Image (cartoon, rainbow, N blue to C red; front, top):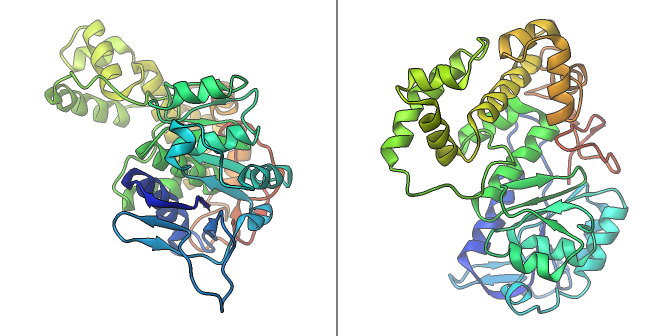
Amino acid sequence: MVVTEEIGLPSWDLYELSIPCTVFGTPQPDLHDPWYDLRLCGTGSPEGPDEPAEPVAAARFSLSLRTPYGLADLAAADTVIVPSVPDAVVTDGAPLPPGLADALRAAHEAGARVVSLCTGAFALAEAGLLDGRRATAHWQHTGQLAARHPKVRVDDSVLYVDDGDVLTSAGLSAGLDLCLHLVRRDLGAHIANQLARRMVVPAHRPGGQAQFIDLSVPTTDDAGLAPVLEWARRHLAEPLTVEDLARRAVMSPRTFYRRLQAATGTTPLQWLLNQRLARAQSLLEASDLPVEKVGELSGLGTANNLRHHFLKHVGVSPSDYRRAFSRAEGGPGPGNGQAAGGGHGTGEPSGGVRREAVPARR
């Protein structure tokens, strides 16, 4: 992860810096061993063991960060994360720290997937890695990103964008959504869900969900939706419709549609599809049920329909997903050996999985 050299790092940048540290830098041996190998790389000269330690980044709260790793170390990484850039880069068009754009290009050319959180997208755009691609950033900065980099297809309405080997997220908590999405891609839905549970956050918010919702909706609306959504999760195998859910919520279909979209940022049918895909992923990982039965229990229907939705939204077939992540067959999971993911040059499609095994991901 790149830590840009800046004095007086704003508190929101500290938050985005801490997210990858928590997700990737904290060992979880009971979930998967080995876990990720996270290295913080400064944009200045790396410090030798006998050299005086100078801060790579310092916060207003007297927090400083020192690291022996520099930009040259990015070339050996499987994944490179840029959580933010200095405010002056965004607001005043100041240049990036020297060598950062070149280091990002070199890492990408060496096969690394490159990830930005919030304003880190400005670094990826300056390196040319977003040209011709769809990307996002915090909605407050997407206008500046689009104006400064017209070759980038900026989308200010989503939490994150997975373009295979280049991924971008909106600001603050959307960065956590993207990091959990990476764990889901690498190690499967079960491990990502368990990690999210430990962090007391939603297990999976799809990248296409809106960055912000209509806060004018009273909180009682959300509370009123909770029972029917929980009921729907328990009955995914049934042929549910918007009318069915609205009737159970004692609302008109139009009111139910409006309130669910305001509360979740997605439509009722898309919400149902997301829940069914998540159920299918869990069944493929945790059981040896036939694909036809997985389709039936998840509500996705026939094996062909399940395969269609997996290829479109997950990026691989159900059978490939099971081979990569099935705990029943010794795939990724507690005590099941090597991790699936992180190798150079996979370039899998959006939402795909990495199938080659490596000792650890950097």
